[in-house]
Image (cartoon, rainbow, N blue to C red; front, side, top):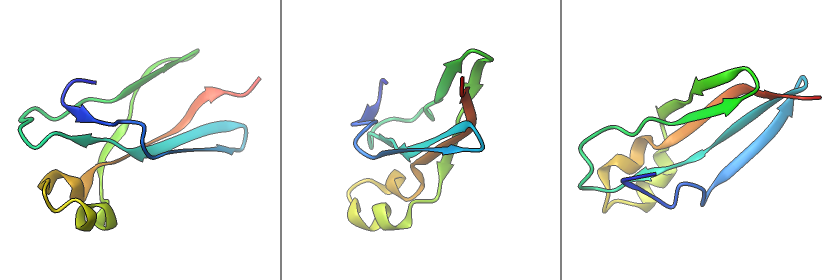
Length: 82
């Protein structure tokens, strides 16, 4: 991912009702002006990820990057269970 530091340092996945939910943190670099677009591709096609979710604790930890306050992402119902 261009402009994103360590996109998989924090990642979690849960199986909910036979559907995979994936979420984590992806911190854009301070100098990045364009909002990153996260997508996932599965058997159903390409899906856009919910991006820019609040991350207040991480924002406190990374005061050097004001974008850190809203870097959580999540996608629900991807990757059907077989």
